[in-house]
Image (cartoon, rainbow, N blue to C red; front, side, top):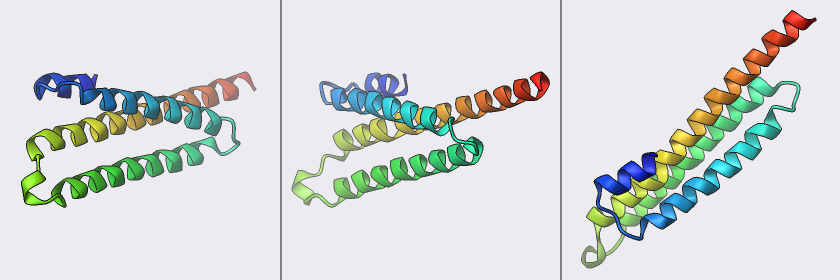
Length: 119
């Protein structure tokens, strides 16, 4: 939804197909990684490290894309067109990682409480 809102607000065209596909790819990968992390005995610690690593990775990719945009020759710079796409790539993916992290942490705590009550 964040990517769609950015696309509507910036009057984007077909370049946002990349943004939507990247958001779907990140969502699938983060879902699989967090699901596997739940199966470990110290899942809470692993999930925290995975979330931190994913956030750092997304932020580094964002800084890399911003640096690449600013490193273009002056005649080829299109900041008005490039920066909304960079924001569309970074912000929805950050939101995806944070929502997955919050949901998985909540689910683990709830499962832990049920396990204690059932024991």
